[in-house]
Structures are given as structure tokens and as C-alpha cells.
Image (cartoon, helix red, strand yellow):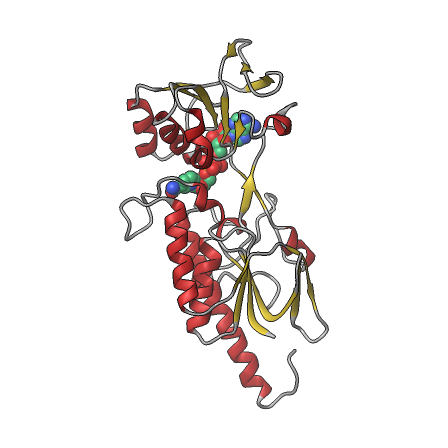
Length: 309
Ligand code: NDP
């Protein structure tokens, strides 16, 4: 029986684990990919204490910290979660079952796909969702990036270090990336930004050879990096009767509490407007404190009451 089950091993989940461990709570962190999506960010410049650090390196520092507190991190995929009759929760993974008194949900998001024909078929054959992982394979080639946020802006900058040319395809008349990132794109001679442009077709036979754009023109590229945002992974929350908003984000209050007592949420899966590694970590820490208070109150009431309810 754990005090806290944390689902998700990104910045929010790992930060929560550091705090629950320090509160003396028996904790397990379950996450398929330690580090989460921040691993894909080749350069994080806005995590206090680090002027610039690769996302993967930052997350390995989180992992070191978690390990130092002897919190187990299970690299498993949670398939379902249930509330038990005694008020505890059981998470079932592809390998085991974990029961805990409280749960902190930090499942984050997954990459959004364009949904065009051939997209899945060309994945790994020209289509990529991670410039950090795949950028170096496109040395001296012409590539494009779809998207207008910070992921697209950072991805394009990284690709410009390898590729011959990088075209950023933005569907609106402006980008929503941070001004500092936009300025760097505009100042980079290898990068061209095309506004009001959508990708309509993926061209190629055995792999990507180009894209057809909304103005009818064709752009010859051997790589297309899709950086068009993320899909919230909140299915497990739904199983627990946790309230979501219209974007499928988990609704939390200032204590990272959901509508279900004993269940907390933090990070990109939650309904917070500004989603950053630092804000996710902070929400995780607040969730840890709320879980601690919940358990303490239960323990205090158990002294006069009976059972865990
Ligand atoms: P965002 O949701 O911020 O941006 C998604 C972009 O993709 C938007 O420009 C959107 O266009 C566009 N888009 C969505 N669907 C399509 C489509 N079908 N075709 C073409 N374009 C499409 O996602 P990001 O991943 O960029 O960023 C998510 C969050 O993570 C942000 O808060 C960001 O600041 C943060 N982040 C921080 C980083 C860091 O600090 N190192 C690194 C990367 C991200 P439109 O504007 O028209 O809706």
C-alpha cells in the first residue's frame, strides 16, 4: 500500500515525488518515459537555475534527485485505475498493480498529428515529431516545420544547425512562439517563415519527397517536422470520475485538487493556461502538499474513527 501513486514521470510528476518523499510518504512514480516530453526539447532556457540546458539533461537531474530519495520509478504504462471500496485507488499497468491512498495525475500530453494520408506510413521516413531526436539525420537537406508555437520555433532553430534550408509553415498570419524565439527565427538566414500556409498533402512514394501547400504550390522537402501542439492524456482521470473541461484538461484548484477527494493533478494535463516545465513542477509540488494534508487528516481522524474511508 503506497501513500501516493504518481502517474507520469515528467517535470510535474518527478517534482511531486521529491516532495511526497520528503513529507515521509511512501511513493511510487509510474511513467512510460522518464522525463516525458521535455526530453524532446533540445534547449531549455527558462528553467530557473539553468541558463540553457537540453531537456533530457534537465530531466535526468530530476531523476537523480528522485533516486537520491529512494522513490521507485516504474517505467510502465498505466492501463486503468479504479477506486476501491475502502477509498484507496488501484492502478493497473502492463506489468503490475499498485494500490495507494492518494493519486497525483501528471500524464501530460502526446504529439498532435496532422491527420493527413500517408502520415503514419512516412513516420520515420521523412515525417518526425521530434527535431531533437531526428534533426541530425537531415544534414544538408531541405526540411520544413509545421506549427507556430515554441516547439516549432525551437525545432526550426535546431534543424538550421544541420539542414540546408528550413521552411516554417504557419497556418495563421502570425506565430504564437515567445518573442525571443520568433526573433531568432527571423534573424537566421537558413530559416524562411511562410505564414497563412497549411500542408494539404504529403508527397512521395516510399518516403516523404515534398508537401503540397494550401496555395497549390509544392515544396520539395525530405523532412517534415510536425510541431502542432499536443493532445491531453486525461483518459485515466475520466475513469475516476474526475471533472475535465472542454479541452479534456483536468480541472484543478489552487491546491492542485480535482473534484475527487484524494486525487490531484499537475502539469500539462491540467487546466492551466501557461504550460511550462517550471509551472508543471510547481503544480506537482502543490499536489504533493495537498496529498500530504489529506493523508494526515485521515490519520488524525482514524485515531478516533475506524478504517480508511
Ligand atoms: P502550441 O499549442 O503552443 O502551438 C501549436 C501550434 O501549432 C500553433 O501555432 C497552432 O496554430 C499550430 N497548429 C495546430 N494544429 C495545426 C494544424 N493542423 N496545422 C498547422 N498548424 C497547426 O504547442 P507547442 O508544442 O509549440 O507548445 C506547447 C507549450 O509548451 C507552450 O506553452 C510552449 O510555450 C511550451 N514550450 C516550451 C518550451 C521551452 O520552454 N523550452 C519548448 C516548447 C514548448 P494556431 O496558432 O493557428 O492555433
